[in-house]
Length: 341
Image (cartoon, rainbow, N blue to C red; front, side):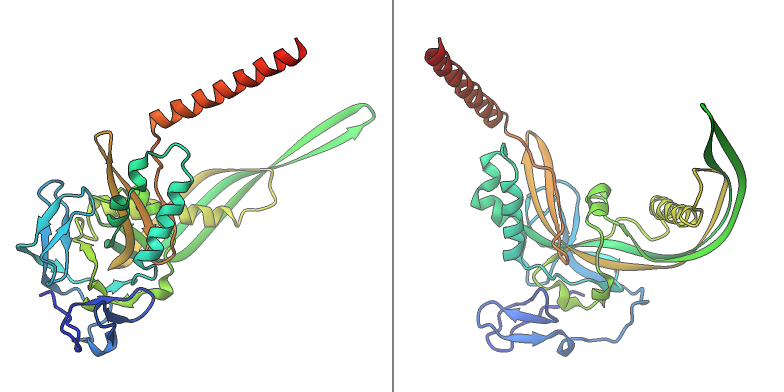
């Protein structure tokens, strides 16, 4: 069951402080170490099922986990308001978490800087209400460990030229190259969220795994977390992660074949063995907005500050800008015509 963490000084809710292993009271500034709040010593391999407080958004269907003291909230995906009246049952407890290192103030600064890059960005995105909409959410990921074994056969060439008098000769030597390789890949991230676009989550990488910690509920305090939509052995998840491992292994083998003018794979048999899948929460700052009937998102990696988003353009601003440029050019041409006419 979700746990409420109260300030020992004034009784107000404690909130996780990005960049530190502690909770902070926003009212009296009391600091409490997370190590003093731990209730169990379950390690990162634990796959315990438990119930969490949360809600299902009635507009978009997102299933979000929040603290027990959160009575109402706004869906971070579609912006709909909701009152917390239910519990998400049978949710697997995360084994690991990378806590937030970027706080909300810094996230707002990054969002403002991103907006400044857009010459034609609509003014609505620069309003205070939009800045207040930025929310911290832990996105569910599976971190996979794989062992890969490859049998590769390739046809390679070396091209050399020779000149005799006025004649140039081109010699192409052909080679048969074989490789048998084994490799291990650790903590390959695949997001388990149905609402988060896969392409966006892929671009949020890399996360620094030295910051990975065993999950404890205090890290969730003051933030939201989406319930995973896909189990680790789901067919879609398996396809995504194994496509990545195949790409990694193929690239690693290709890099061992050097010194040739060209390399063409004739055989590339890769066998994969899954060693582990770890349910982990990764931090994301999220801004959602609706523009021209579509939901758009801007994301910030809550650990590294990496930003992913597409700036919308205002047609009105674009027309006004080009009209201004056209008028300025015409005025200059008229002026020059008057001077030299």
